Image (cartoon, rainbow, N blue to C red; front, side, top):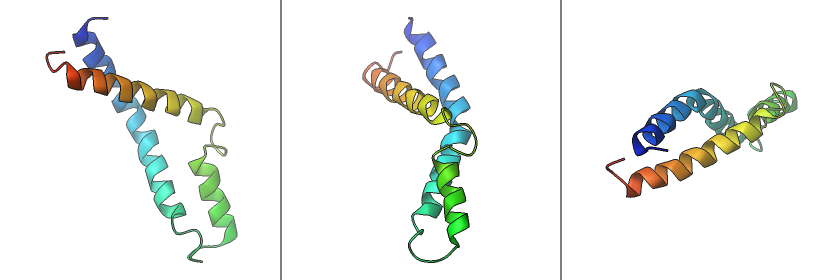
Length: 84
């Protein structure tokens, strides 16, 4: 794969995954306070289901993991080859 194509693919995958990763970050932030008693047990279960993608699509977490792994590897390659 040509380096220019890797940079473009990296950008496209990052743009596609960014809303999902933002949702993952926000629910993780809310779950950080799960033991403080700020919200009820039902709300906590909802956020856990949303954070683990059980209430949306059970296997999307695997796809997001693969996508983040691709972004990490391609980002390292692009970092060490700035002309790419």
